[in-house]
Length: 187
Image (tube, rainbow, N blue to C red; front, side, top):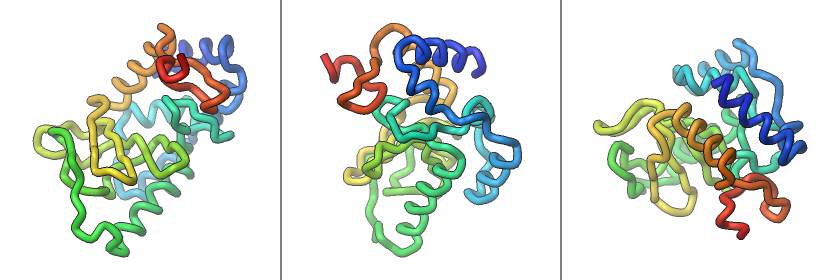
């Protein structure tokens, strides 16, 4: 994880210094333990390693493919919104259209959002996968549609692929989009 962050930070320094400056300092062990306690989960080691590099970002620009990288506090805030909706019965038996390995829930309290696009959509760590899934897989969580896709088998796999795509030019900074986005979207 440290090497991936080193490579990503070097790219940011050259191509988007404001994005580099938006990264928060590392999360403390206490912040991570508090987040786990609030969520009632044990976070995957690769994601914890990421938080120990940077506790999200601070300015709301889109660092991860058109989404904000959430701090521990913001992870909890976004998770709590979904949990309250679930507890209030807002999903009323709604189901999703998941890919294999993802449960057929509209939202699951063991889906931990680590990004946010400002409109209710997230990438989540799935800590409660279906039988053919993997604990810690990264999935999409769209607020208006039931599509639930598996993006990667783990946070580290997601982040390694993302950094690779940034380094080889498949992602680029776009002022119009307010952050890093797929280069094909701005071509």
